[in-house]
Image (cartoon, rainbow over all chains, first blue to last red; front, top):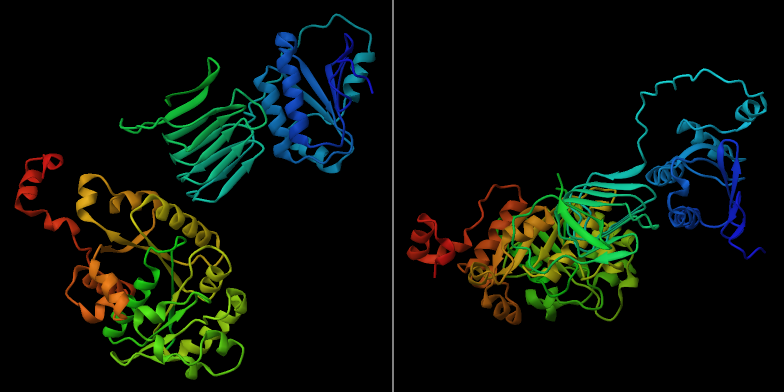
Length: 245
Length: 271
């Protein structure tokens, strides 16, 4: 087991579950097929965050081996990468399910076409305008169209949108953002696997407890002022709520 | 005849499920309906006590389920009012003596002979609650205007909503004190409805005579028919039968000064 965090400039390793390699098309991230997906993606994001601007504008290819991933799990990591200015280019996998999820997201499932390009002699090429992609690639989430009562829970690998109230005693946990089109009185955790850019929005923000990534806060005791839509986010090292406009 | 089965539940204990069951049963029977109430609180029965029928129990619900007697033998008829019956709970057993399927079989046997079957659910969300819910056609949730009771009512309504049968649920808010609400010391009916967003079946004002009536074993709707709580229970019974009955304005006792103050838009300064 290699305990050193860096092997050489092109081959960065946290432990042996995630390996980064420089390739022609950018970066090849190999994630071992065992271990919990959310833990591993969390670790990858931590690694990216710890490298400052190094990953800005990078193109990443994921090599996942036989791991089965559903569409929302892939779109989840795509979103998290996009937030860090990293573009997900392709997903290499031996799993039928993962390959199909990858196709659904419009991502490449192999690098061979690119490798061919790589092998071609470098001819000074006329810059081709990139094809126009009119499709807006959204991110994945769950939508709940009812009031979440005491004792009900929602867990999402992407975002969570609740059209209705979140009553005291209800719990919403999402890796992405949490949007409540109603009154939020329960407990909510956005960016639950460490995404500090996640936000929590509600028409009336009065949660029992609000967490974003590793931050935690409670509602102010006295809320005399008129309810207004608010957005909570991490700012200046703590959770702050501002008008949601 | 095919009875409508109404389960009365609350989550939290002590909010007035049993009192509500007894008084709704009496009120429905007074409207000429044929009613039986079932105490589903096996091991902690007290509907019989509140109804004053304790000393006439011979067999109970578990005896029926385990085949020691037939349904008719276990039923206790209330002699004060026609067509009101009680099926008591067993006191010496626990909730596991009965299963949800047993409750369905039992009530299927009663349905043809009654118009209303009221089931008094035990507190909590465990086995006994599930037994009480299993045969229900509709659920009445009883709560008090206090935060803990409303929390539990919310949990119960959530469980009912998550049930695939999509049972209709409605709410009784019990023990409301208009004076305290006015002072801002008690949740108002609006506050409770705001949180629970469920159909309001009725509001029962706090009435010390309810306690006296329970202790005597004479439901307030039998003995003290003109009290505000009696009227409220009777109105709820009528709403259960589908009649449109407006809510009583509990605040009307505020008097002329308060009403004047309201007209001049200074309700907060009212005495």
